[in-house]
Image (tube, rainbow, N blue to C red):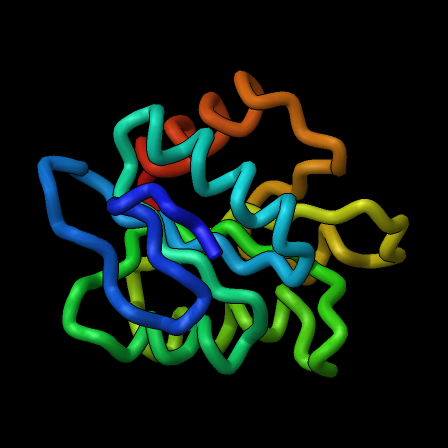
Length: 139
């Protein structure tokens, strides 16, 4: 799916550790968007894993390498949305930070969210800035 060596394919396999300081898990069911977000963040120096749904995301979260940040779409076709996934992620990795992405108006999302919500389409500079800012914040 994604050819960049430090970006995980949607199989749930861990990325190469490399010199990237932070590991970001991108959960997005739209393949083109997942690849775009992964490529942007990889070029910015982050280690990336990509999962197309919550099941594959949980596989990455349960692997040996910790995830520093979960970048997840809120609305996914699998029945488990990004807000529920973020809560599952926190049960597996207590310190994981979260940024949500969505193209929908979701009443009450801000109240339930564990982190900022970015609206699609997302400017590359905004994505990198928000990931960097979120990783720098204390929980």
